[in-house]
Length: 324
Ligand code: AN0
Ligand code: CP
Image (cartoon, rainbow, N blue to C red; front, side, top):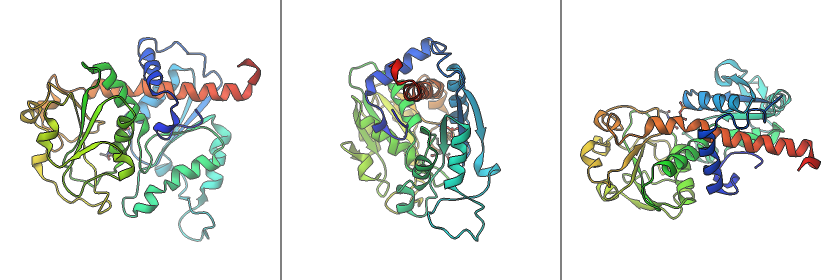
């Protein structure tokens, strides 16, 4: 593995999930692997889980961690090549990324989409500029279109909790007060399409995800149909892809309720968090046995740990090719 940006960076998904679950049993099995290594975690946006779980994962591997809220504390960055920098941007990504690469062996970046210009967001300019100019393995901590550490976590959690060989997994849109990125559902769809699950996406009209992420998933605009017989309900709000970044409706009838959970095969409820109670999902579900959200968030550590492990192995291989 050279970077961790999408599901395509993982060679053997099944083995990867297995390794992550092994770390859950023996967190310190590779505590010397990261000796004398430093990971830099750069945040252009807020975070609780991604920041703490990635930090914890690095510590378990003996890696030093530097965290910076670059969006708040750093110079304003220019990402366009050839820009005449006579505005408010003080530093170009060419220097900024290369400089971070001088201090860190691995670099994680979180940068949300702007949600105004679809082509710009879907071209992944921020992540691509870091990939191009850092000179180090890059981990996406959620980019403009994907959240792979979350999706790996979700797959690990489904693997832990599934009661049948091929569970029915439903990704359902749910209402929200703010316009949110499509990253989590895009990525979840991408990973579910690569996994051994029966995958259904339920969303209101106007909220279909980008076709390249929907892939072979079954899409329905009828939430009740989707819930019937489901083993996992994964709720998430996203803003419209078609009418890019817009909130088309806040229909409360799409909120996940206990009544709807009764349509399922005693499904587990999943959400990436943070979640707005009684808007996305009612208290009764989150506070019931259905909810897997805390276990899911806990698994973020093992997902990050297996990713960092593979990047550390890549670095060691490059430095000592005769050892391998
Ligand atoms: C973000 C999103 O929807 O992408 C981060 C989720 C992990 N959520 C919010 O901004 C509430
Ligand atoms: N799920 C997730 O990525 O949470 P944070 O935004 O708190 O990191």
